[in-house]
Image (tube, rainbow, N blue to C red):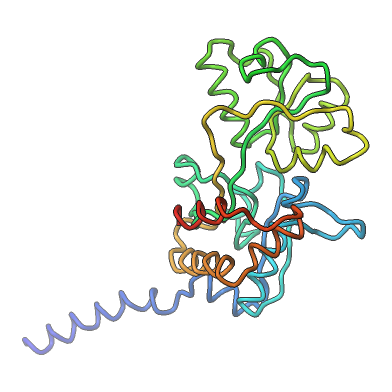
Length: 274
């Protein structure tokens, strides 16, 4: 009788192990499929954009291809808006999003974050002649930003704290729409990243525009995102980011898209925050 009970206990234990053994994690799934579905925001140069041949390009796109090479699989780059990043993971459309996603605690309730891989500043951008000497001057003008971005969140939180609210604020569907709205005069200034603004200042369309004050006391630290439950996959992605620094790929891509070596401060910040 005792032997039968022991056999029954072992059988139950084995039955509980079967789902764990038979269920492949995301890392296994990507390798078996032979393709990485990598989401990128492609209206956010130089991190993501379409090149002259209408092919995805940019710093984030290069990281997608580096990850695919490390895994030994093909890469399918999927164009996302800011608001589509998290839903694309939840629905299974993407395996990973390398989309300059700020690592907020609120977002971490929905998705899993890797170590940081880049750091931005948030900045105002306006036509020359608009009176913006400090960030508080935004109170008196029409302001816009792309919907679902951390700089939208930070601006609205700052405006609420200062007491002027959001009556002067316009949310745009995408990054391109925000810049178009500024160009068309729908708003007097927008909030964007220092990297994107630097890119726009090199274009003919925005030669009469200027970069203004930064969002006070804020560095935008971004990570790669995937499904929150995929711990093994996140561990692999973390090691991948370490190798991007160690193997020189971070520096190579920074040279390609920003024209300089990656600043020592950026590399140190990424190492400290990992």
